[in-house]
Amino acid sequence: MARDRRANEETNDDRDRAHGVAGDRGGPYGLATAAHARRQGIETLVLGEPMSFWRENMPAKMMLRSGPDWHMDVAGEHTMMAFLAERGVDPADVAPIPISLFLEYADWFRERAGVAVEPDLVEDLVKTNGRFEATLRSGRLGRGMPGRSWRNTRPSLDR
Ligand SMILES: Cc1cc2nc3c(=O)[nH]c(=O)nc-3n(C[C@H](O)[C@H](O)[C@H](O)COP(=O)(O)OP(=O)(O)OC[C@H]3O[C@@H](n4cnc5c(N)ncnc54)[C@H](O)[C@@H]3O)c2cc1C
Image 1 (cartoon, protein in one colour):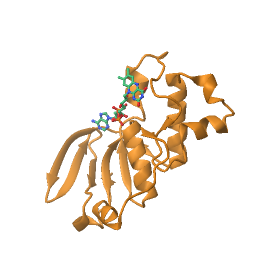
Image 2 (cartoon, rainbow, N blue to C red):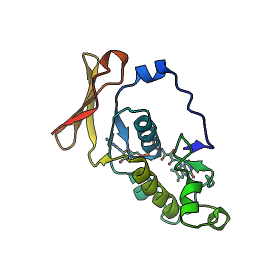
Image 3 (tube, rainbow, N blue to C red):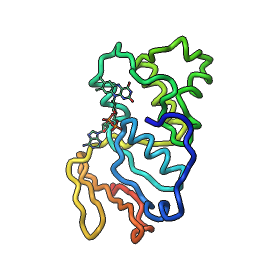
């Protein structure tokens, strides 16, 4: 998760390097990466179940060690603070943050950032001729390659 507002410091070279991101997962880092990529005009393919590691493997009554100044938005717009403010919640009243509230923030962030998640799992990933191909549990094929020489290649699913 990002902490505090950070300036967008990418150069044109950085943007040229990444014209497609495939295989992001639906956890906090995957969602944050996908949102940032989308903002840069880079198409993404996010697989998995949104926040499933948190939903399924952490105690339901867990309190986060992160405070409300931690969030998923590199641009500093869709922050935990913004989420709480929109709901009229004083951050002091939710410290430490319960996991249920953080999961609500994650859903809110995903919606605000326009990040869609394909509920599918990667079972195999190979690189063929400089291009990644992922075999998904559903049997579909996910394709994508971040790279300068593949700038017209976008992450996609063969349905
Ligand atoms: C008990 C506990 C408390 C924690 N508390 C905090 C905290 O307070 N603050 C904090 O910042 N961090 C905390 N962490 C750390 C935090 O959980 C991780 O850093 C974070 O979840 C990693 O996020 P991630 O994006 O890598 O994905 P993860 O959260 O690890 O999720 C993995 C995602 O990948 C998807 N996936 C899995 N397998 C596949 C597959 N084969 N194909 C496609 N998708 C797949 C899943 O559906 C899931 O959405 C805590 C961790 C634990 C265990």
